[in-house]
Amino acid sequence: MPTPKPMPRSLDAWLQLLGPLRLPLEQTQHAHLCRTLADSRKTWRDMADQIELSPTFALQILREANQSGGSLSEPADSLEAALARLGLARCENLLKQTPSIPEAEIPQSLRQILLISQHASQQARGLFGTRLARLWNELHGCSLLFLAPLWPLLNSYPQLFNTWEQRVLVKGEPANKVEHELLGVSLIQLCLKLAERWRLPEWIVRSYQLLARDRRQLVKALHIARDNEHPLHQQQMLDADIPLRHWLTQPSNCVLLANGLAVSAHHAWNTDHCLRWQRLVGLYLQIPLSDVQQQVHQQAVSSARTGHDPSLWHPAQALLWPWQARHLVSAEPRAGAAKQAVPEVWRQQCMRLIREPSDFSNSQQLITCARDALQACGLQRILLLLADRQHTRLQAQQSAGLGKAAQGLNLDPAKSHILRRLLSQPGQLRLTPDNAAQYSALLPGELKALFVGEHLLLRSLANNGRVVMLLLADQGGQPFTESGLQAFAKTAQCIERALSNFSKRSR
Image (tube, rainbow, N blue to C red; front, side, top):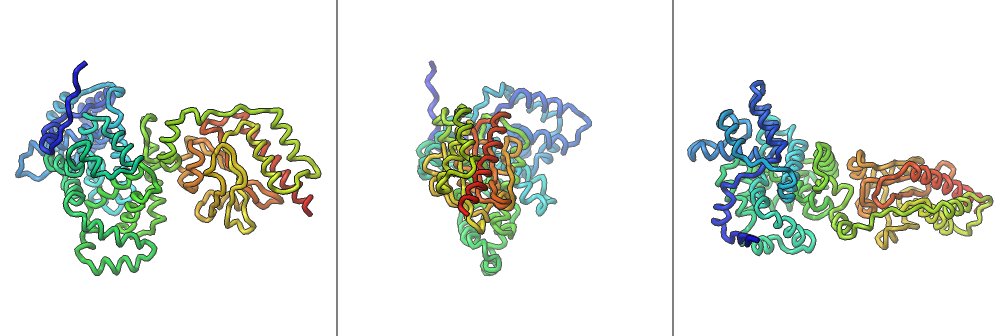
């Protein structure tokens, strides 16, 4: 067995290794690009659109165009310009020289970072595309290629991604310390030097220069962005610092903002790191933080809808499956096993619920019986929330399969459109893989952390037409069966009847 080659430890050694490296293409993508370049009916713009679906080859084109153009020529600022500079014959020859391998042989770490790059491009188009309509090609291409200096690194040493993720995101170690221990150099410095060596577009280089050499403007902007609830005061502070105001409006900042959002979303949407990028976007666009969050969530969902490898973690999944919960579940693969229904016990509990007159001495006895009936019909994770008279609070009363995290849970319905809707009138919402990303973005983070997965039932339970309780349940993240859905509906009806009987008994 050959001895693995040691990793470089100096900046020059890294540049010598990664600078000329050709990144592989998946065989299907390679064949598609061959057909695209051979189609004489396509314009440069049409070809650029197709090549951008294979980001590693887009990097090859841009890198070849800018390095072959000579140091005196201006770098091509878009893929379309790079294609026109190279010409069709050179592009076809470059594609022939690009390794074509099965998808299974492409390192997962490389495919993961490419997915984050594509998400960043979607964020840039959705958030800034209208404002920068004249610079559409530059915005899209630079956002897609901003993380390109990391691609050859993870292709050569794919284990670095998981190591960095575990040490920085899971254990909370300082990123600079981890990078120097793993690489011997600063990761930002390495990215900057590669971007300069490849002569990537100015927007990309300028963003890395900001991160590597001068973060003062970024820190000052972050300080102002924290005061998002007072836009007039923010504007006054910007007016008092003219250089900062001019810097903030530079189009190149959109590339950095979009990638900051995408990388932080890979971890979680509810971290301070992600919040800082969202506030910066709010300051740039001059809109409230709540509007920013709604837009970035929508763009994440749009990105996920384009389709991706299910073995990869799409940042949009963090809207419904928190990053921490993902790693917890992967460590406990049996946690999602569905329970078997117990028909006899279920019937007994339902009979007790609908009995007249009610034999429950207090509401807690009723709610406990409701929980037991739901468990008996095969549901694994259950949460029963009691609403106050004004529908301003939701308090957890009973739960199953959720551990201590559900005990004492107290929610404000005003912060969730879905909760407000379910409290306004009796109703039911079923989350499936087709709609989970869309609706989960509107649920409180506490509930998403409890119910990990893409299959969930939410139902409001009413007494005399007025909602008094919310019920959430699933089968451990597994899909619902038709019989399971019918049992759930029947149990919910029995609980509502029990609530009515109990209220009559109380009077």
